[in-house]
Amino acid sequence: MTEPKPRPPASELPPVLGRVAFLAVVSGLTPLIPVPFLDDYALRQARESMVLTVLAEHGLPRKPSRAVEFLAGSHVGRTAGGRLLSSLKGLALFPVRKVFRKVFFVLWVKDCVDVASSALHHGYLLNHALARGDLKAEDMGGPQPQRIHDAILAACAEVDPRPVNQALRRLFAGSRLLMAEATRAFFSPQSPGPRTPTPDESAEVKTLTERLIAALWEERGYFVTLQQHYDTHLKARPAA
Image 1: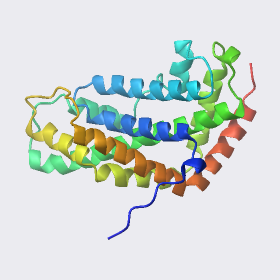
Image 2 (image 1 turned 60 degrees about the vertical axis):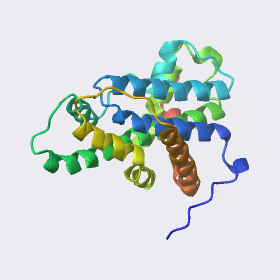
Image 3 (image 1 turned 90 degrees about the vertical axis):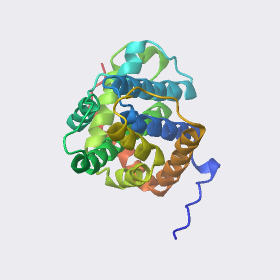
Image 4 (image 1 turned 30 degrees about the horizontal axis):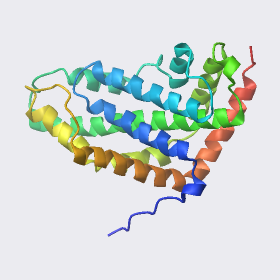
C-alpha cells in the first residue's frame, strides 16, 4: 500500500495558496449540487471568494464588484460538458438507469476536475500577479483586472494541465462525497434539493485540500512554467 505523501513544510508554501487550494476544492464540488443554475451560482460565489481572499492577502480593496467578477472569470461560461451535466440534474428519471449510471459518474468526475483545475490555475496565477505588483488599488476601477484575467487565460491555454488534472482526478474519483451524491442523483430523484453537509463530509473537504496542497508541492516546476507564460502574456498586452 502506498504511503500518504507528507504535506510540504509550511514555510515553503505561502498560506494564501493553501486557501486557494481549499477554494479550488470547493469550486470542484459545486457540480455535485443537483439543482440546475444553483450549481453555477455556487461556482461563481466560490470563485469570487477566492479572488476576495487573494486581494485581502495583498492589502487590496475588494471593490468594485465588477473588477472582482473579471478577476474571478464570472463572466465566462462553463464548458459544454458542464452545461450538459447541469441540465441532466433536472431530470427525474433516466432510461436504462444501470447503463447511464457509470457514464454519468465518469462525466461528473471530469466536470469536478475541470472546474477545480480552472479555479486552481486562476487562483494561483492571480496570487502571482498580485505578488508581482501587477494590480494596484488605483487600478481596480480600470481595465487592468480584465488585462490580468486575459493574460491568465492565455497562459493556461499554453500549458498541458494533465499533471494537475491527474492529481485532481485521483482526489475526486476516490471521494466518498462525490460517490454519495452520484448515487443520490440516480436513486433518490424525488428529493433533488441541496442538503447540509455532514461533519464527515466537511472533514473530507479538508482532507482533499491537504492532499491537493501536497500535489501542488510535487508539481511546483509546472507552476513555475505557468508563471513564466503569464509574465510573457501580460507584457505583450499593452497597458491602457
